[in-house]
Length: 175
Image (cartoon, rainbow, N blue to C red; front, side, top):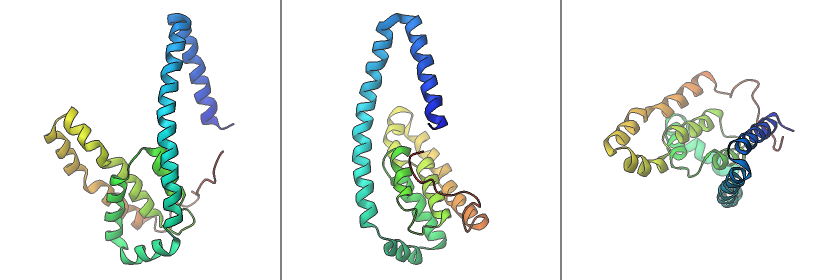
């Protein structure tokens, strides 16, 4: 088993024991029901996301990526990759498998890094939530102040790691 799985199993067991001694079997059952509802919702989202990912992987060929990279190399590619990351819907359980699907298609490290950076910094799907829960001025100020960050990270990674990070390889599934 993977150490992450073991760690989560131990934490889950500890929380179940704490819930049992805090509120008895009723509290444990309530927690299990809440977990089941969350898992069901996430399962549907993950299934739909993997369907989309699978279709995109078959529709977007290595030649298309190569042509796109020749057309949008350098700073244009970095800017587009960061914006694409920000526009990509879903959480990490959706976009990391999406990126892993392109592992054999020759995308440079700096573009993948910029995509992930754009997703983490921009994530434009959060904008309506930030506007409604915090304040429109603060939300837009955050986007304005952080806008150059993924682009700069992409430029820096291209400059210092043009061939990727030495010793870091793609994982090859279910460990």
